[in-house]
Amino acid sequence: MDHSGHGMTMDLPPFTLGRGLQWSADPFFLVACLVGLALYAWGVVRLRRRGDSWSAGRTVSYVAGVLSVMLVMCTGLNDYGMVMFSVHMVQHMVISMLSPILILLGAPITLALRAMPPAARGRKGPRELLLALLHSRYMRIITHPAFTIPLFIASLYALYFTPIFDFLMGSKTGHIAMMVHFLAVGVVFFWPIIGVDPGPHRPGYLMRMLELFAGMPFHAFFGIALMMASEPMVETFKNPPASLGIEALSDQNAAGGIAWAFSEIPSVLVLIALLFQWYGSEQRQAKRKDRAADRDGDKELEAYNAYLASLNARGN
Image 1 (cartoon, helix red, strand yellow):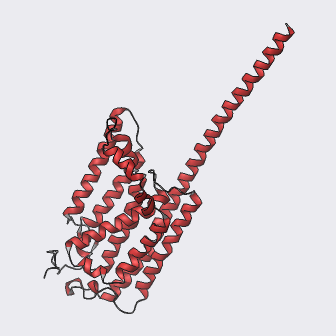
Image 2 (cartoon, rainbow, N blue to C red):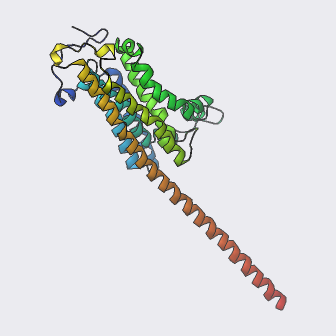
Image 3 (cartoon, rainbow, N blue to C red):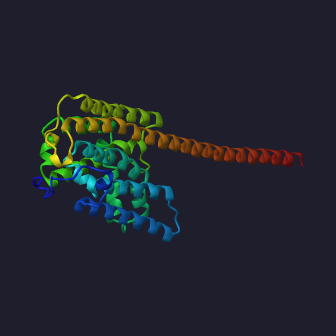
């Protein structure tokens, strides 16, 4: 028996970690991830050839972020995620809350702006178009907390507790669109909070922490709602294949537990990264003040020497 639009066998054997991690690539995500890695590598190589440095930590973070997308979309997790709520929830949590953080810490936009050559005078090339997009009204809207926080919350409740989820799960295109949506929502939510790249909104560090804590509790509430439900709430997962040997309600409870527990992971990751960024910012500011003080001190010394010289001239 095939899942409509997926051509995927429904009679999967019971889930094990080994089966979940077997290679089973979704062509769309495989190509997208490989292109993303290739472009990033091109940028790093271009900078190095020019004699510029690029942080190894950023490279590692970006590569880990892209590989985490491949982990959930190009393995057996993607097959089991079509019929098991718990496995689908692992996919959702990773691609919306772990992958975006790692990708953003890799600063891909900064790398692109540094690596791409500027266009000839009076013309617009890829670099100019990217800068125009970063400064556009559209980007200001979609990265504003008044937009990102409600979108982050609605992506859970409006999707899973309405027929939209079942509709999207009914076709391969719908499923891909949903996963792309999860990744995009994670990126726009975490970008103003943790992003190293330039962006329209860059609030202070305390404000960023408040933005983080404004969104995260809703993930925990969503998980608790699934754990406490007395009947299956999502049509797609109401009748799991007998070959899996699972019961729909216990699988839904497990999905809720995953959603509840996973909300802690990005919170801790983001807080650690924010504290490091804050410390680095304070250090840079202190150095700037020291340099300014040194310059002022030199000016005072020069003025005093000039004053002494003028006194000496008068005495003579």
